[in-house]
Length: 244
Length: 113
Image (cartoon, rainbow over all chains, first blue to last red; front, side, top):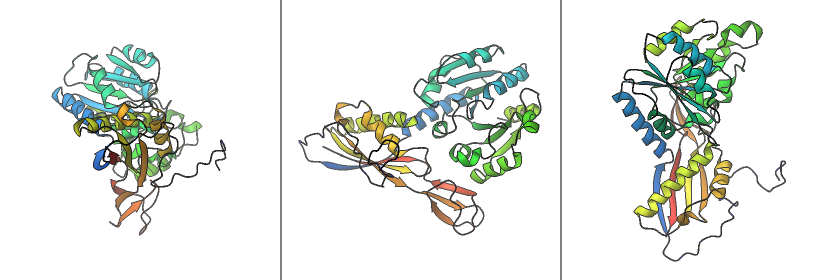
């Protein structure tokens, strides 16, 4: 018996059929067919992501999807990045949060056009949300499109937005075992950005451990380290962005 | 709660099949959920049951089969299957691998009339 609510649920058996249904089964009024489908459940999102990719390519936009847990420093990194990019390359930003326009307001304060997506129930951005946001941004061929995903290390892993590169941030105030705890998002990332490195003297974060764990999950992962507020490592990050 | 988004995708796909194949009702659908996907089968079941569905899917039961991941070891080139991201290569113990599958979800089949 389940120790939480006393129900009779046990570990889900392969092939188990849901017992939760409250809807009455339909009265069968025709010959039942068994139809093989073999369809990817993520098909609709992948299709939309491909459409986004074509659009990015047509406008020479480099789309970067930034993912992390809440509070890893994505918005601060974007503010500092955009301030330093001024005059070097145009940039556009899509912000994803469950609620509020707060992050988009911070980005607009740097002079960069930004659209806020409020996801409501959803814990991630999907390709269709990004597509709709693109229609609200000014056309700026050749720009960087920085997409700040919802702070969450699980759900955004499954949703291709059509981006060129996916960057996962881990701040040194988190555990260095994050890559082992949330492997999927690290597996799908191109770059690991270790942030808030100015705080290293005050925390027990082992940078080498974190990188080793991340590369066990994704052996080809590139790694950069920076402090957005103090500026250390920002030029290497900007060079990485320039190459995208 | 991305399981709810996935259930909406599932309903859209099934509804499309119903229209294309001129069916009346879907009785059941079977998914193969990769062991390395970020999907909790019980949450998926709960959402599918609780959500409002089109008439052709009312009463439809969801069957879930777990599909293990498959990988090739980067160190010793062994091919093996895995249930968990942290399952090491059974031959040499390395974690570094190239993944061939197991992080996706397939709609395998449906029963309908």
